[in-house]
Length: 427
Image (cartoon, rainbow, N blue to C red; front, side, top):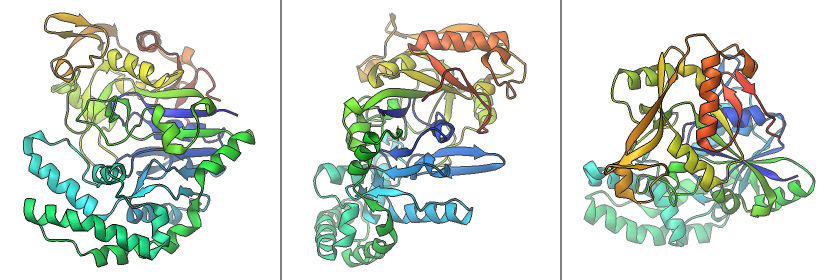
C-alpha cells in the first residue's frame, strides 16, 4: 500500500491536525517527518480540544501507530510533558515510536535561539525561540546529539562537552551571557534515557515492513510550504523541509512509496512571524478574520497575521509538492462577507506576475491583484454535502479549486471532527 503525505500549502497553521485526525480511521501509521515543538496542531473531538506541538496528530486515534521520524528535532522535556498531558486525559500513548536517529534540542540550543533573535532586532526572523534552528544547525555541522546518544553516557558527555566548548565562548564573549555547565546538561539528559527507551525504534525498518504488509502510512509535516528552508520565503522560514520531498528524508522511505500528496489550505491566508505577506490585511477585515477564525498560534500564542486567499501561493504549493488534491479548511470563517477578494496574481514594478517570483526582492514588493467573488450569509457548519452549501459558497470553492491547480477533496465547515464535507475519499 503506497504512503500518502499531508503538507501545509501556505505558511502553516492551515489545519493539518484536523485533516490527520479525519484520516485516523483509515490509516495505520501517522509519521511526523520534520520540525519540532515549533509546530502546533489543534484537534477538536466533541467538546474536547487537544493542542499538539511535537507529537503526531494520529496519537489521538486509538488504532493508529504514531511515529516521530529521524527528520524531527526533539526537546525531550517537551516530549515527556506532552505525553503526560495526554495520559492524564485518558489518551493511550504507549504505541508511540521514536527514531533513534532523530536529533535532540538542548538548553544551549534554546538559549542561543533567543539571544540571537534579540541581537537581530528589527531584522529578526520571528522564530519561536525553542531552539529548533540551532539544533538543525548542529545536525548539519555534524555536532548534533541524537536520541540514541542518551543510552551511551560516554558519547553523550563527549558530544555535549565538545558543543559547549565553542557555544559558551559565543554566549559569554558575544552575548554577555553566563557559560552553561556541561555537567548539568549531561545530568539532565541522562535522566531522560529510561523514560524515552520504551518508545525507541528503527522507524525506517518499521515503516518499510508496514508498507510491505499493505498498511496505510500517513506522513505528516509541520509548518507549511512557504516556511520550507529551500522553497519558502527565505530567510523568514523554518530550518527544515516541510514540503513533500522532506517526507522521504525525514521518515526514511523512498519516493516511489508515495502516491498521494494532500495539501491543506485555508479559505483565507495567515502567517505567524516576520516576512513578506502580499495579501495581509491591516484593517477591520483582517481583525475580523483573526477574531472569527481564532487565529492565535497554538505553540507561540502569538496573533496570526491574516489576509485574503492567495491563489499564487496555492499554485506554487501544488507545483513544488506535486499535490494530488486539497483539503480546504475554515470556509465557515468567511460567512458574513458580502464580497470576498481573492488574489489571482501580483503586480511587481508595473508588471503582472502569475507565478510566485523566485527573487526575494520581487516577492517583498509584490502587490496583490484581486478578483472579487460574492459572499454568503447562511450558516454552513451543519452542511454534510457540497450541495448543501449556499450557491455562492459552492462557487467560491470551485473558483479556488480552478485557481489552485488541484481538486478540493474535503472542506472544513467548522472546528469539530464531524464538521467536514468529504467530496472525494482520501484513501
